[in-house]
Length: 245
Image 1 (tube, rainbow, N blue to C red):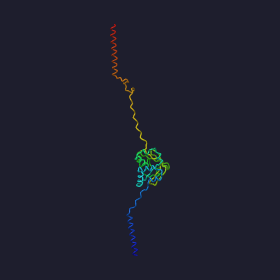
Image 2 (cartoon, helix red, strand yellow):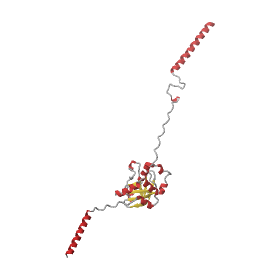
Image 3 (cartoon, rainbow, N blue to C red):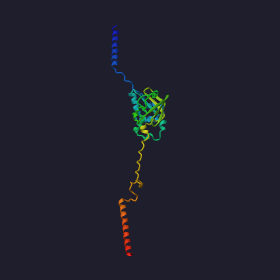
Image 4 (cartoon, rainbow, N blue to C red):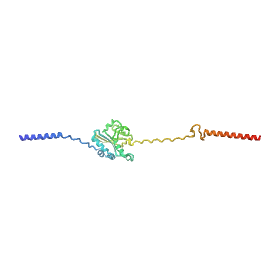
């Protein structure tokens, strides 16, 4: 009986010690998000160019980091390889690395949007590229039933398919690369050339002037000379008349 009581007491001591240790142990931290946006695109296929740009601009890392540190979610518009192929030749090579980053940021919304939520959003949408209210990165969405249309001021695109959604990340396939107005908009018109100065013609010259360039003084001199010649002529005639008479 004594042996049984000792065993019971010993078991109770071990139980209480285990409970104390468990109570003092911190709760396990929640596992970080395992969502990998490039893995999702690779699994879907036909997004090779987009994946390269997301990696080269480090935008893929930014998306994954935000998914693991924020509860607002992310929405990614994903152009297909065919969408990139339809761009004018040399389009991507003609922009800088900073502009490529802005291009990728323009395809990312810093919030999760389901297809139905696009029906009630306020335009223009705010993208990771910057504030759309300044007119540089406007992104407007319209819906017709379940169809979602996107306009950037440069191109019009349509959401063709939902690639992935888990209420934290939404990836939508789009049929056009979303070209932002700030990078691909029309160039500012060159200033108009200044009008040539008009030369003053004779007809437009001030009154009192003439094409011969004569002046009042010159006219007066000519008059005096004319009167002098007349006087001389009259004098010669008088002398000749007196001689013959």
